[in-house]
Image 1 (cartoon, helix red, strand yellow):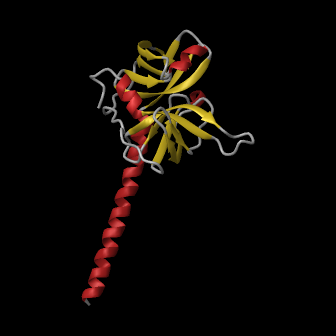
Image 2 (tube, rainbow, N blue to C red):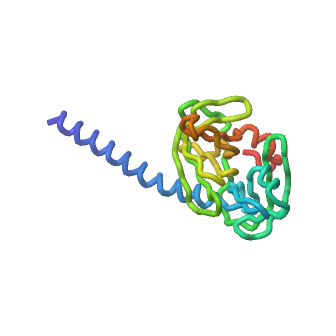
Length: 196
């Protein structure tokens, strides 16, 4: 009888835990989607990550496509640029979000969720894992869509691992993988008031 009760308690705990994770997943994805914005220049498209209300992080190379820059169709201004590390910080009209948390410690095989608005398409999400880490780059096997520069790569807790900068491979070279600028590089780039 006691063993039967233990088994029932164990099953209840497991089911309750899974239900809690299922409830957490949509809430997390909705939060990450709400943090993703479209970035458009005169000659190209990309994505940006809302750091706090009114501040957007994206790739510097998007500026090479044109002179003007917009976030979700509205004019944006440049706050800070780092061409060497391909980072750009913009002031823009954005929704209210919780402050961005950076994942400064990243491990190989860690889960990655990439959220972006490639070529203006909203709510594009892919999942994968970290396959390699160097000092200046993180390689991930999540599917990266064309026009995904500046998309956020997040861990399972919603902290930013980095932003997508390029795609390599494919077309006979094997499965394409994404290259991500690490959160540590972003941390050093951020003004002190934004760094967390």
